[in-house]
Structures are given as structure tokens and as C-alpha cells.
Image (cartoon, rainbow, N blue to C red; front, side):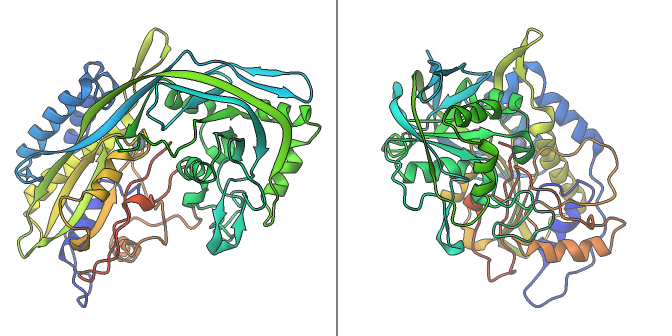
Length: 475
Ligand SMILES: [Zn+2]
């Protein structure tokens, strides 16, 4: 659930922190959340001296120290066995000497420029990555979903090949929530993380997503700033050797040109890919790309503050927000710091403001965990690490609300839930909304690049029949 605004969220959490299997949802007095705190924290950690809060960068130590101080002032306890932090091992990979991405074969050769035309990166921890004379195949939306009887890789062997993949789910144009992939609501199959994971499972040498602004809901500028420069991956024993040599994006007009060169119509292929039973299409082209890496291992940190519960301290409710942002990125008017004031200093500010609100209201029955996670921009690495290495057992974690990029448009009248129907927290939200002046918009939200992330889902606890449904991200 992304947009549970600050005036409302404590009420929901108070409900969660007090609910039991059989009891009705109790009445909860509204809690004041300090706008001054929201402003102060947002302003502080988005200042230039925090250098855009890149994980491992100079801004990390500043952010960690500041949040420890604010959490302590708000009455929280260090949440990880006496420590305020949880170590998250990462590898920092910075691409350099990136060659053009070239396509040869039918038609005139096409040579794309790194940055404005395409992006390239890799999960592999290796000093050099290359894709050589690799056959190019359009694999539709790149989805293999046996439970839906949908396999875009059926009948095609993509080992060593370069796969082109369409962004979002096949039914993203649907106006409602009906469709094999949830209609307008994006499933995990629509996310870039899934598409790269599946391409690697299929043995592809390179996986390239065709950028389109509408289904991506984000412009090329965001793709370019997020996917060029330093990237982070989780540290792993095999150095992610099982991943594709290269992953990236290309701008739509170049994909259209590739198809035209191959004597095909991109729009027709795209329409066909939206239908069940689509067969992958070979383009009779060869792709070439190479790049080098600077590699640095580093230890980043999740920040963990705990408010112990009064009656059921062994059951936990999580508030989370990612503290990191992009650090230094493409220079604009001489400024290369991506400050991340909205994404996600606002979410972190909400964590602090909520902790203070609880301090004023008194501790609830259940314990509340305030979790500021790292490396979200690199693919939810901090929240994934917490889900794999929870400080408190997930079986005792009864619910969670993640906050990412709080809206800045002014006072709100309604609540938009990202991930509707994916969590039993919906029921609590509905009850709480009935007791407030707020409502849910009548129409479902459009399909966005923001969804509930299954990597941090826990089984519903028997204690409260609530489930963790945290962690949304934009790229
Ligand atoms: Zn974010």
C-alpha cells in the first residue's frame, strides 16, 4: 500500500496493532502527525550534502546518523539486537567503456548510443560483459506463467540470444481490473525485475526492454538516469553468474526501426504479443555490445527502530520506507545530485513523524517496527534482504505499510491503494475509511510501474489474518 497518507496511517496501524482474530476492529482516536517534522526531515536528508543518498556513498553515513538520532528522540529503541542498523551486503558496479549497441543483418546496420538511445547494465559481478553476434528475438511480454497457461518463450530456445521484451503486462490497456494479468493493475510479470529474471532463466545472453512511456508510466529520462552510472546488486556467492550478460532498455523508435529493417511491423507484433498463444519472433538480426565494470563490494545498512508493544510485544507491525536515492546522476544545468526529496525523503519523514505520533499517543498493544531500507532504487535490495533475514520472525509479523514518494499535491480527499486485493489490510482500510472523511476513488488506478512486491510477502499470520504487503517502487 503506497499512498496511505500520514493523517490516516497511524489510525490504520493502531487498528492493526490492537486487532485480534475474533474481535471487531476497535475505534481509534485520530492521531496528529507533525507537518513540521515531515518538512524538517525531508529538507534535511534531501540537502546537497547528502549527495542524493546513494547506498555506500557519503550520504549514507549522514542519513543513518540522522535517522538514528530522530528515531531515538521519538522514543524508539534500537531494533536489531541492540543496534540501530542491519548490514546489507551489496556490490557496486559501474559500467565504463560502453560500446554502441549495434544490430546488423537485414537492412542498414543500426548503431545506438549509450544513454540517449539505450541503457546497458548487468547483474553479473564481472569486470567485462559482452554480447557477440547474438540472434535477436522478440519474446512478447517475456512472461512464463504456467498458472495462467501463458508462455512467451514456448517453442523457442533463446540460449545465447538477445531477447526484446515489451514493458508491463499484456493486458495493460484494459480499462478495468479484468484480464489474465489483472487488467490495469500491474502484476509482478509486468515489472522489469521479473522480465530480466525470466530472460536469465531462459538462458538469454541479453535482455532488452522496449521502452514506451504509457505502459512504463515513466519517461526515458527516468530510465536513463536510473540505468546508467553506478548500479547495486546483492552480494552473492556465485557473483550472479546465472544472470544474462547484459540487461537494458531501448527507446521505442529504435525498436520500430529494427522491425522495419527486418521487414516487419512493430505495432502488429505488439498487438499479437497481447494475445495468448503468441509465438516469439526471430528478427534475422545480430546484436553486439560490450562494456567494462568497476566493481566494489560494500556494506550498506537498513535502519531499524522498535516501539515495543504493551500487551503482545512478540507480534510486529512494520512501517517501511526506503532511505536511498540515486546519488549522483546525469548533470542538469551543472548539478549532478539527484536529491530525492519526494522519492523518498518524504516516506522517511513519515516514518519519523509516525514514530513521534506514537510517542504522543502511547505504545500500542503490538510492537511496531520502523524500517528504513536501503538500495530500493537498485531493485528493492534492502527490503529483499530484510525479508530473507528478518530481525523478527515473519510468522510473528502481522502487517506492514510501505511509504514511497508521498504526494505533494496538497490536502487529499481519498486514498489510493496500490496492490488492492493483495492483502487483508484492505478490510481494515475500508473500516477505517468509513470512520473518516476520506474515501477510495471509485475507479481502480491505472496500471503503473508500482506494485506490491512479492519478495517481501509473508504468509498471513494466524494472530491477525493480516499479511505483509510492503514495498512499492518506481523503477
Ligand atoms: Zn521510491
